[in-house]
Amino acid sequence: MEFDTLLKLVGDEPLFTSHVLLAGDVDPKAIRVQLSRWVKAGKIYQLRRGLYAIAPPYQRRQPHPFLVANQLQRASYVSLQSALSFYGLIPDVVAVTTSVTAGRPKRMQTPLGPFEFRHIKTALLFGYQMTAFGEQNALVAIPEKALLDLIYLQPGGDSKAYLEQLRLQNTEKLDRDALRKQSAKFNTPKMSNAVKGILQVLSGDSEEFEDL
Image 1 (cartoon, rainbow, N blue to C red):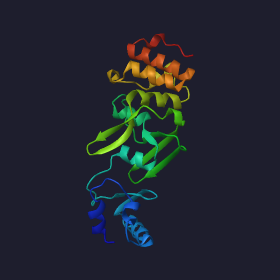
Image 2: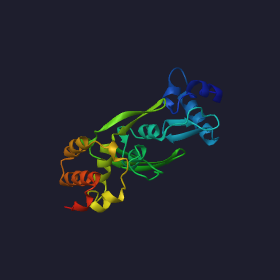
Image 3: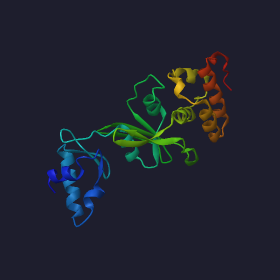
Image 4: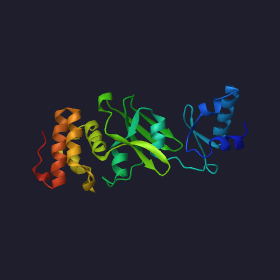
């Protein structure tokens, strides 16, 4: 296969898989060898086994990091600091794209940046939605769930000190009822305490918040 043929097939896609190229009457070994050569030549990026992106200057559509995260780890959604930063709820610029998954935790360094996946039990995989980024889409936690996921995974995340450390902003984007309902699904004293603290911080009564 010539590189121009590859661009005609997948050049308009932000990401592509080797399965697309292996369909039909082709030599799988030859395709894999050619992909490896293109990676070494810097014409395409390999993000994981079987997942690729066209590299600049041949790239027509830059993959959004959230789309890449979804594709790197199936059964995952973007959450934690990345989602909170996306919604403007924290002031920090997040260098690592963070997600949660029922799979094993891992950190991946790719040509498109670093990605981190934190483990959460299957019963807690809720509170996310398909979100559009132009013509690309990715599963992202709703604002309330992104905050609760972070608190759940952070030791001492329900403490007054940690909640203040987050420096929450644009808090009008947080739905108080959604926070209560989402936190109840965790069914832990830590999350019950956390939501009380969050609501007090949002109402400006953080000085009255006492750690359990």
